[in-house]
Amino acid sequence: MDPLAPLNPLIRGPRTPGLRRTEPGLTRSCRGAFRSPRPSPKSGQADGTSEESLHRDIQKLKEKRDMLDEEISQFISEGYSVDELEDHITQLHEYNDIKDVGQMLMGKLAVIRGVTTKELYPEFGLDMND
Image 1 (cartoon, one colour):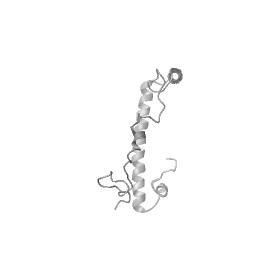
Image 2 (cartoon, one colour):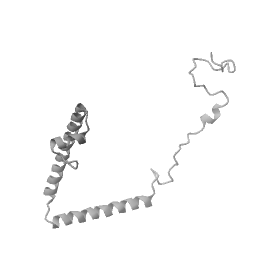
Image 3 (cartoon, one colour):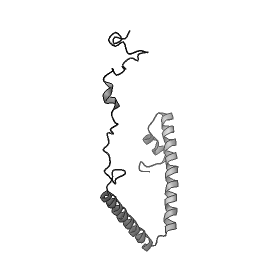
Image 4 (cartoon, rainbow, N blue to C red):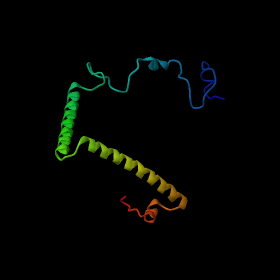
């Protein structure tokens, strides 16, 4: 039996342990306007960022773009072509994918044998830095 039932005859229906309805007279604070825990943005700031902050971000992005353009120019002056660099990056991605599969297989083999992957490296002629 609910210990609060005799104290408040207005509450009817099934009780959920640990949960109680708000007593009449205490609901006034629940009916007020919603107040967000986040501060509201000032006028003209749709998402809370200032125009000055946006200008700083834009300036940083322009500086980064200029730095990357400078690096590209340096690579081109050293004789690299964009196609060659893109091909090299593609090969690196493929190498990393193959290496990941190899690591996964080594891990499964180590589990089957009950050893660490480190212990398998010499058996396959691998260096720990591979």
